[in-house]
Amino acid sequence: MVLSLSLIAALYMTFLRTDNPASAPYPIPAPTDSSELSLAESVPRITSPSVRRIFDLPTESISTLKLDTLLSYPTEVIVHEGYIYVSDIQAYTIYKFDLNGHFVTNFASGHGQGPGEVGHISDFVLDSEHLWLVDSDRNLIYKYTLDGVLKDQFNDNRSKYRLVKTKNALISAGTDFNNFITSYSSDYGVMNEFGYYISYQGNPVTTQGRLTTDGTNVYYASLYASFVYKYSDSGTLMYIIETVDKLPYPSDTISNNTAGQAVMRAPRPDTLVADIETDDRFLYVNTLVKVDPWYNMIDVYDLESGEYNYSVRSPVHFHMMDIDNGRFYAVQDTTILTFILPDIGS
Image 1 (cartoon, rainbow, N blue to C red):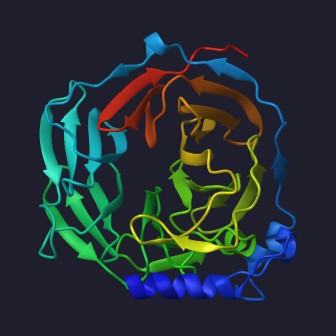
Image 2 (tube, rainbow, N blue to C red):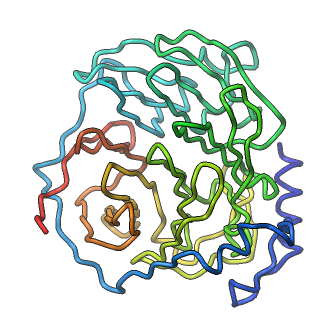
Image 3 (cartoon, helix red, strand yellow):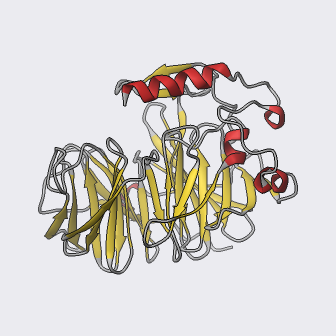
């Protein structure tokens, strides 16, 4: 893994980006006949206003879920069909709770390289029958029943880190510049690879971005340069949002974070995209603002058109989030917060 990341850094340093994103070099050249690159110049590019329309989330509307199990290092929460799923990377597992916080079961059997054991749970997704988790240390995808029974595992040697599930495909984004986004069929056959345009703009599809889905389409948000890209699950680029909080492009300089991973440094270290989520009407871009005290800004965009609507400022900070029947669930340190956004009318 260390060697792979060193190679990634070396590749990226070879291709220094210019000030013009349209002419920016990219680490692994996309095919010259790539339909995505040619289409990108004609897809809708939605600009956002430069000033937010801000509403405040009342402090008293935020509550903390009481769970049976103490969390060590939760990273992601998903609420699905009456249950709450929380990944804990220090416990090397995913917990399943009912809506009252009572423990039901867990997925993954601890740290290691044996069956069901993991090195690092970087992401997970589920549908009405199964849960899939990514062990990014070994590029493995594990498949479980919702009762916690391991069904199978899959590794095609592609880098894997982020994961979403549409109606038709399981979609992964890795930490390697040449992997982009890969869609898999139910038997793990590769259906398509896309994301060339993101890399072409100097925003490689790596841990430096967030993925979500509305069940049919896939949305990728850059971590530092604030764009959102909408794709069909077959890889067709549908629109690009220049968000209300558009940031400069990241520095070309690669350096290592505290985990030894090669990363691009933020152009504004006080601001980053913590997560993106959707419901049946809106796309929510959750931006973490690291000023004292830290807080979050949830920017709301129309899901169909990509147009900016409004923003909600939270008085407390959090990271990954999920939405279920209008209620938000969010990871904060070792707890899970829950709240409903204020009703702003039209």
